[in-house]
Length: 306
Image 1: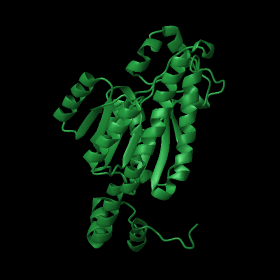
Image 2 (image 1 turned 90 degrees about the vertical axis):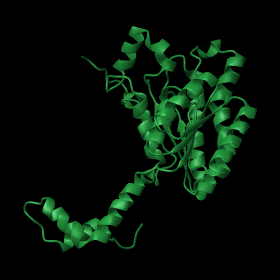
Image 3 (image 1 turned 60 degrees about the vertical axis):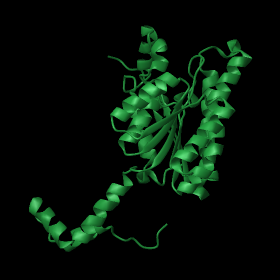
Image 4 (image 1 turned 45 degrees about the vertical axis):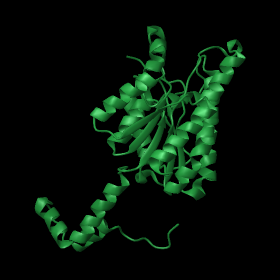
């Protein structure tokens, strides 16, 4: 709570200038010429709040779907990005394409379910970025669609190690680098399955629920280190991961029926939120899980027609 209210420079300017009944460009020019220093500082402040230029980022699983959209979104904002993927040829193909587009993106071959691979990945990140990391996007995740009683112990281990253990360990390894930046931002890719029950996704929902709680705990535990922690929780997004499921037209009808916006999401509708959560403009937002779901998670029983 503040003891006194101080008007921002833009409001102070308006108080000092006569109000025209028909503001036009000449009025703006008068403002700029009369208060050039204040106007310049306001512009600079605005630019800095919405800029990620020169920041460093690690995005796991960045060659497909939402992960690729996040890599390209951040790189488009001037971020120097390192990503990883299991498939070396796919990674190399993406890196070549990004290089041709002028993006500053490097990559490591890494299976995040392997402890050794995770440690090597973070060694690469430390070396590339001089021990300072501003952004960590824990994006890798998988799903095995089966009723709970049909899941094997091996499938359980695969889901837990890929979706949660890897995320937990990478955060541990990344902590000193995020702390060194003095403005770290961690973003997790969660899912609406952590909020509502979805068919054949009991275990996946449990792993994403664990991520949601980790998001909240890190926001509290790491706040003193100037590290923010947030998560995005998508519904069905048009990616290769869900192509097979969405090839069932009847199922797609069910999906659209319980989605107020009546359509599937696009990867860039998730990546734009991730970028915002990494910007100085969101500097007071931490511990939040934000659904990107066309309204699905707030829909109790409100069927769509037409």
